Each structure stands twice: as structure tokens, then as C-alpha cells.
Length: 455
Image (cartoon, rainbow, N blue to C red; front, side, top):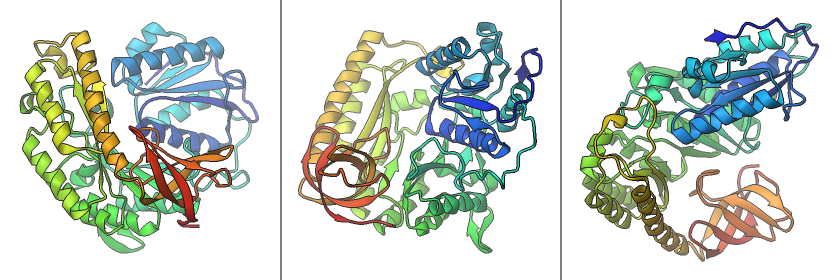
């Protein structure tokens, strides 16, 4: 951590904090943890630069586009406010930030929550001690998501060394949270009205490996620190439980019966990245494409309604036309429900930068367009098959006579939506049964046939 040499600020009775949170859901959870601590101590959170005594920018530095966005956010905060604290993944490169913005008050890396709070104390000290029992923080803490869903982070770091990724150098090796601590947070969120828990980590399915799957406890009852047992416990809370960032270890197969039984959502986010064994080897990823196809078929045999989401990279160094055609063939065979695709972008410090035969940007763009065209057709066909079915939908937004929601198959912000006709009388967080009457490439629409869900 590095601090700028600045004069201590005069204590303020209720200092006001502006906050800019960038990056993935895991960074969002980091922001929520910092904000909850600051709010507990008595700081006021404000939505504008002008009203803030200091601004915290939680950055992302995973790919060049994210790095550029973070640098722009720091520059904007300095221009609009002038008193800025920087944290997050890009903060791990403190010298680079200091060189570009010598006037920032503090620079810290990811997960350094206490250091960020100390920097806020120095920049905007409280005039009097705060009594958290007099000004209660919401029981779920400060959340940056709508009230009815929340991200639940179960681990930090990652033990993999994928050649395109620098996350382990930023966030360290796998560090699983104690099982009892996770379940206590989950129970608190549900009590506060959360209807959907989105389970995240850098490598969710590795949960507990670093702890040798030791025994944890829930209410005095022993529970193994393992993703299957954790999912089973979370599934007993009576809300949607959605698993993200699931690396395809063999034991992931054990989660599918929980989905078939309705304990957790039939939704699996498995980042496969490519389908060519040669490219997967260069990426340092599992290379058994045939095994992945067989496993997806087996998952669907056990749980026919399972939604399989994945992400892929096109234009990776060394990717040939043959490699790319193999990827398209995989898409046709796998018939994945939800897919994201990224054009390869070099990341400072990534091993892939040293690989030979970089792919021309125009070729990568053409491949991305072809990839998305193929997947759009797959998605359109799979969604059309849902017309005439009645699906449980969680309402996210209401405007005018219509509402927007999501089915079991849709994670917020990255997947599709369900447009609900004549849904103006619904409330965000409500669960309703919707008869699906139409579909396009990525979204569904229908009408409410009955109310449903936990109250």
C-alpha cells in the first residue's frame, strides 16, 4: 500500500463517501464489504462526486479494455472531486497508477479492505465515534444490487495458471471462506428479503480444496467444506441458488442431482474457453472436448431443464482456421443455452503474450461475428422450444404496464430476460408464473398466469 503525502483532513461530523465500483461480480462484493464497514462506522454514502468528501474507485485490470475504463474513472474522479482513493485489481500496479496520477491519496490492491478503510479514515476522519446500534446498517449490509438478489462470494483467489489470465498474481491462491461464515451470511441475506443467491468465486467448484475439505458447522451440525455440501445447505434456504464460475472438475457431476431435485437452480456456468485441444493446451485449460460433450449430454439426461452457460475466447494466439471451425462445430453439437464470447486481448503480465502467431485483429473480429451468428441461431431455437410452457420468473423491474424478469435460465446482466405483458402491477422481487408466448434470439415474453414464490 502507498499513501500520498497530504495534510490530514479536518474531522467532519458525518463525512460523505462517493464510490465507483468497476469490474466483475467478485469486485462488486469487495465494494459491498468496504461500503458496509464505512456505513457501520457512520460514514454517509452519496451518489455524486460533488457531494463527497472523498471518492473511492474500485478498479478492474483484467484486460486492456477494463484497465482503460479504470484509468478513465480515476481521471474523472480526480477532475470532478480531487480527493481519490484507488483500490482493486489495477491497484496491484501501484507504481503505474502513481505515475499516471500522483495526486491520488492512496493505492491498494484487491481484497485489502482494512487498508481502504484506513485510507478513508485518514482522508475524511469522523469528528465523533459512531454507535452502530443507533444508526443501524441494513441486516444484509450495504448492497449494490437490487434488494431481491445478492452475490455471495465463497472464496478468493485461484490455483490455476491459465496463460491468458493474471488473476492469481492479483488475488493470490485459492482461499476458501469458512462454511459456517458463508451460511450465516446467506441466512442473513434471506432474512433481509433476498430471493436469489448468486454463488461466486474465481473457481467456485474448487471450494474447500485448500482446507482439505475439513468439517465445518452449521448450527452445531457438522458439514463438509465442499461445494456439493455447501450447495445442499444453501438449497435448504428456500430461495434461488445459482452457481457461477464452475471449473469443470469431475465432482461437478455430483451437483446435477441437486438441480434435478429442485434444491438449487438448474443452471451451470462453466467457462470452457475453446473447443480445440491444441488451443486449450496453449491456454493451459482442460483439453478433452469430447468429454465435455459427453458430460453435457449426461447432465441433460439427469436434469433435462438444466441451463448450461459458458464463455469462449476467439483470436487466441496461434488459433488457425481449423481450430476456429472446430469451435463452431462444438457450438452446433453442444447446443449451449447461454454463451459469451470475447475477442482475445493481451493482458500485461500474462504468459500468452509470449506465444507466437498472434491473430490479426480483423480476423479475430470476423471470427467473433461468425461465432455470435452461430450461437444466436442455437439460442433462438432453444428459446423457441419454451413457447407454450409456464416458467417461474423473478421480477427485476416494473415500468408502465410491463415488467422485466428472469427465469431459472437467466442470471442478471449477462443472460436474457423475460418481458411480462401487463405486469405493471407487480413488484420487484416477486416470483410469478409466466406463460411464454414468444421468443427472439435471447429473450422471452409472456403473461402472468398466477402468482408464486416465497413471501
